[in-house]
Structure formats: structure tokens, C-alpha cells
Length: 179
Image 1 (cartoon, rainbow, N blue to C red):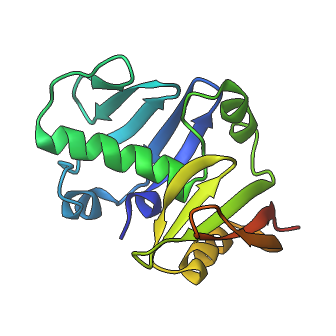
Image 2 (cartoon, rainbow, N blue to C red):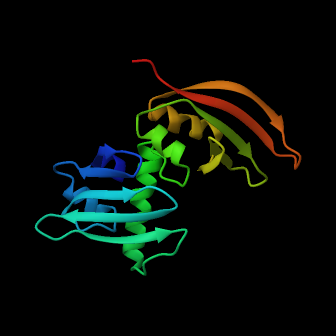
């Protein structure tokens, strides 16, 4: 089970994303290895710096920061928690949280067309860039396509080329599926 299966987005604007933990998810949260099981809500701010705030049942919220301008010294467990929350927001809910204000606004209003470049390097893994920025690695292009399909997108191939360093690059768009 993933954090994305245990939470839902309750607010997504140009400044932050708030995830609410679903009822009955306590045990599965504990199984992820960095949660106590009494977490109720998470907030991650967007931009070049991030503040992650965690609300727990019957407790005061706590937060920590990381990003371009520095970071708060935290335990490995809290660092893992923050990375997992950020990864869930970006990968499972397809929300951009980086430094580009236009992209933050675009993903705060729902799914839109994205331009994808899939590059296969010498290591054999598939490097994915989404809208001109590194997104993540997948083992295969098919795995990358399946990821976007699971988020409610259709794949539209647009072409390919070989880069100057010999890397094969396939380009495609992902578009929201018609409901």
C-alpha cells in the first residue's frame, strides 16, 4: 500500500497541497515505516523551499523545512516522511510543487496536457522529463506509460530523435482522459 492510497487531496492551490488521511488508514500508515498511525493531515508548501506540516490526533502540529535556501536539521525518519509526502503529491496526485509559479498554478486547477520526453540511457533505465523538467526514472517506457495511464491520462505519441550524445529520445503527450 502506498501513501497515495491512504490519503486524498483536500486542498491544492498555487501555494500548498493539503492531504487528509483516509479513515481506517492508521495501521497501513505505520507499515510505511515513518508514521505513528495517528496522523490526520499533511501540508506541503510549493516553491523552491518546502515546509511540511503534520497534524496528529490530539496533538499540536509540527513542521520542518527543506529546499534551495537551506533546511531544518531533522531525523532520518522525518526526512523520509517529508520525501514520501512530496513524492506522493508529485507522483500519485500529479501536482507540481517546484519553483515555476506558472506550473504550480496550472496543476492547482486540475489535469492538463503534459509534454513527456522518455530517454533511454546506457544503464537501460528510462529517464522521464515532464514539461521540460526531470520527473523520475522508470525501468521501462511501458512502466512510465502505465504510471500516467493510472493517473487518468491517455498517451499520444508525437515522435522521437537521437540526441547529440547518442541517447534515444521519444516524445509524447499525456492528455486527460475524456470522462
